[in-house]
Structure formats: structure tokens, C-alpha cells
Length: 304
Image: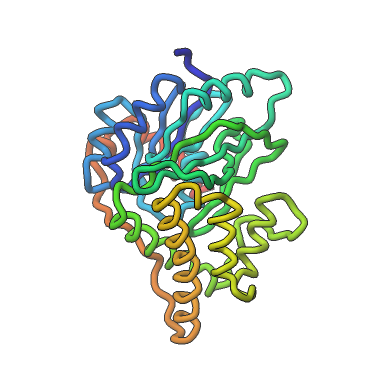
């Protein structure tokens, strides 16, 4: 297997149940792995160091800001950069397709990839397209609390092979995560934060998604319509019991965002942005050359 001129960046916080497999998936074909960890309390740092991965730490602020910090301060020297989450796996076919795409003379500035979710141990047919690969230096993330999006300057190409998204190890973890994420979304809605991408009904696919997200709570029978969309149009019915349960829970996620936002508006109490449990900086990371370089770079930027 040959290495691609691609560096992979990941954000981590207490993901030792996924990280080793993620690194094993990436290492054979990438030219470097960079991890920005938010002070994990489990074995995340141990696993990264055992596998010789570049790791630095920074306390979590929000997803958009954390990603922009990584892009600005990690010393990525490859011509291409890729975003992956610890629970995602690049398939061999996608790796080959990436190699072919970035070697073309007229290659795009970035590429989106279909993400196929696994739920209850089974891959689901519904998938979403997300930009994950870009020319180094040509990407910035929307500065939002959660569900950040990339802003790429230039043409976006489309890859056809999947990233496999294995998400949470069990439903308890999945529900805990969705509870935090729905609170973040409700805070954004209550404070009337701008959406990551300007919504347009007749814009591109992402702009249309933002339009429906902005106006979703005005649509009559919206939860029934969304259930039909996922089950029938996106094809979750073909995934049997797992697809049926996944659809019901995805509908409930939207309902929870709306209910939490209503509660915040009625009571006037907006909570702090929820944080997953985190610890302190790891001395092994603090003393590393990468951490020192990142800290100096960030301090220099802060001082202007």
C-alpha cells in the first residue's frame, strides 16, 4: 500500500474505545496523523502515544473553534488535509479513489464523501455527503457550538466510496451524546446564532438543508414528514429493525431540540454549553515538541 500526500486531523475526547482502530485504519496510507485532544481522562492519550501519533491538547471551546485552532496551529506540510473522527473508517476503495482524485491535474479544491452510519452493529442505507478532504490552507470551519461545516474556497468534487461511521459503542453512550448535542443546538436556536451556512431554498444541497433546518419548526406535521422522508425516501425501511429504530430516534433528536429551545424561551434560563467530562493536561503531551510549538504559535497569534 502506498502513502498518499494527505495528513489526517482528528479531535478527541475520551474515545479509547475507537482510537486504536482509527489509527490502524489511517496509518498505512496517510502521510501523517495529528490529534487535538480535549484533555481526555481515559486511555486516549496512551493509545495515541503508543502508535506514535502527533498529539497536542487544548481545552474544548466549541467544535468550530477547536477545528480552526487545529488547522491554524498544526504543522501540516502535505498538500492535502483530511478530517476524520475517531469513529470513522476509510474503506480501501475510498483510499484508492482519493489517490486517483488528488493526482488529477484538474483536481478540485476539496471533496465531499458519503458517510454511511452503523447502528446496532449494522450499516444503514441512508447516508449523508460531507466535505472531508481539501487542499491544505484552503479550508476554514464555521465557528459554531456544534455541527460545524467546512468553508472551502474553490470547486468541490464528489467521491463515491464511503466513510464508515461506527458512532457510539452502545445506545447508552449514543443517547448521552445526543442529549449534549441537542442542548447545544437548542442554545444556538434560542440565542438566534447564525447557521453555519447561509440558508437558501434554491441554493446547493447544503444551503437547502440549512433552509429547512431554519424553518423546520414552522412546517405542519413535520415529525411525520421527516419520519416518512427517512424511512421511505432515504430507504431506512430496507434496514429492518435497526433502520426502524434509527429513524424513530433521529425524529426524537429533532423533537428534543425544539422542546429544549421552547423551555429556554419560556423560562428565560439558557444553560451553559454542556461539556463531556474532561481532565487535566497530560505531562507527556505538555513536554512534547508539538505541544510547545502549538502553544507558542497560539500565543504569538494572540499577541498579534
